[in-house]
Image 1 (cartoon, rainbow, N blue to C red):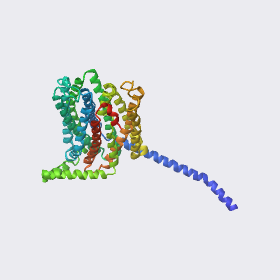
Image 2 (cartoon, one colour):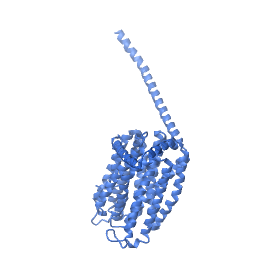
Image 3 (tube, one colour):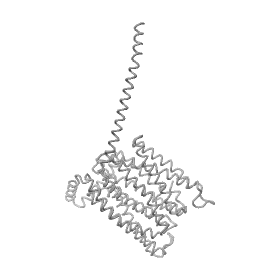
Image 4 (cartoon, rainbow, N blue to C red):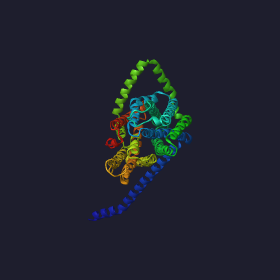
Length: 484
């Protein structure tokens, strides 16, 4: 009994010591965690400040200028077509269909060109091609709005002048090639240059991707607002003239900015000379027919490899998003203007609200990544988008018709545009997450740009299916069936 009591007393006496040791251990772990967090913050700061501001601003400036021109044309071209041909979605659908078919057929080839050619000459050539085609296309629209405007009747009836059909065909062809030029610039800058500049830094890659995505969203927000401001305060032909001048000016400015980026980021030129010499020797040794057959064989190998990649399912998920007409693209803009009688300014404003919500998605993405990880954050973002689109779909079927004005009651408008805005948060968060997953999975792959371009082709295939559906259901009143 004495021994037992002694043991109990000893145990009781040791408890404060054990508790003190536990507290010290916990305190030590907390200090270590705090120190690690501080080190991470310092590392993040060092990674970000490692990038010089002049070339970074030049990179962002070039991307802003290119995206502004792209988003302006994306909104304006469909707006012009629905004004010129107000009773049918066929011209807008033909434009989207042709651009998408071209992308499906040739986006993979554009990606291979990025791999096969020197970085700076490739980007400068494609910038020039994009701007020249914008000049041509805006010039064709100007002819339609001025000399030939009185000769345009409702689409589906015979126009007084066959030149209208010819100019429409030229606009579609020019827009299709312009889409390839834009794809080439985006693949080169966002998938190649940005990855090279980050030099394997996950932190810096995330930051650069976020910068460029926010530039895209700002342009998507403001560019349509400027288009609608010009069309309502000046005229449609005046707006076309403005953007024709803009394309000419930015042709020179973007060439300057991309040269600055190239000169400052020496990593872009590392080992490029030896790789280019090796590629040139290989091309000289092979005859043109052999190169063509090898190109087809390589494309087949790329497709097989792309389908086998673990990242393929996420590529398929982001591509399926392109199948819907609930996306504030040219088709939905045409529907809102022709069937619901919304003004240019109102459509641009509601699209702007959706883009602001998309900006919130780019802010939410890093927070979700830190808390959930990339994969779970992507799943949450995707489901958020799907759930938010349910009231948009319902708004196309309830509350319209009867004695209501074409726009529908206020609650119906709130369902449509509120749901569209909320869905953009999940969409742009998922888009950023999927882009980073793709970049990190292909960082060291020798044909990363060709495989990345295959995702663009997959997106274009689903986009193509959407336009094919709208060509079949081409009346503005049939839009609700395409949204299913």
